[in-house]
Amino acid sequence: MAKGGFYAVANGRNVGVYTTWDQCRAEVNGFPQARYKKFGTEREAQEFIANYQLGRRAASSSGPPTGASDSAQSSIVSRKRKGAVAISGADYVAPKRLKDCDQAIWKDAPVVYTDGACSGNGRKAAKAGYGVYWGSGHTDNTCGPVHGAATNNRGELLAVDVALKQAINKQMGCIIVRTDSQLLMKSMDTYMDTWKRNSWKTSTGGDVKNQDLLRSIDESSRRIHVKFEYVPGHSGDVGNDAADELARRGAQMYRSNGS
Image (cartoon, rainbow, N blue to C red):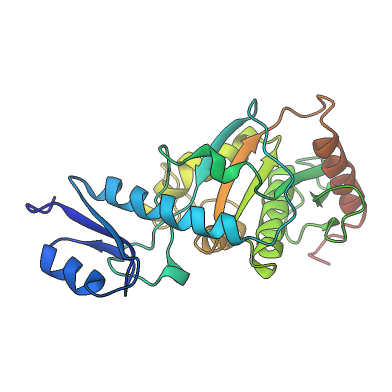
């Protein structure tokens, strides 16, 4: 920890966390509506910046307001570029968890449902697909087969990967992803950082499965604030049921050998 504390610059010449007042002052002196504050830990400083950036992005997002469920189990997953100190506002990535984030920020955030499906999961003749559901009649609703191994987990991950890329292309500042996959929730919220630290190796030394999709999701998560919410499958949730149906359609398109 820096002896002098951590200086968070949320709005200045270069957004970031600094370890001396002189560095901070150089970024905020004379800057219109500068926003900065000193903290005892780097995490607190990053969260201060994250809250400010999230508020600005959510307010300017052009995505359709769909609301967020208060009853859903949720976790906010976003990441900071390793080793970054001072970074531009356009590239800013929040810390892993924004526990103190104002929930009002997510009130009107765009919501997307994702799902994967696989018939004969784990068998030679398995067929797997993904589904992404934005809402009834939405032009971005989509489905398709997975590429590579036909597994349900791969379908779940590909659905998220596609949804995040869609959101980024529409320049959304934040997005709520709803899924019925507990494994996906744990992968995003718990396992991802460990896998990255271990060079994408498991605790037993093997390669992490589906790391091509996990890496892609991780990269997208650096460009948009993502909140994952768990929705129990087959519970009557309209959005989840629609994503499931799309994923089933996608699975029917699957052909072996990655075709």
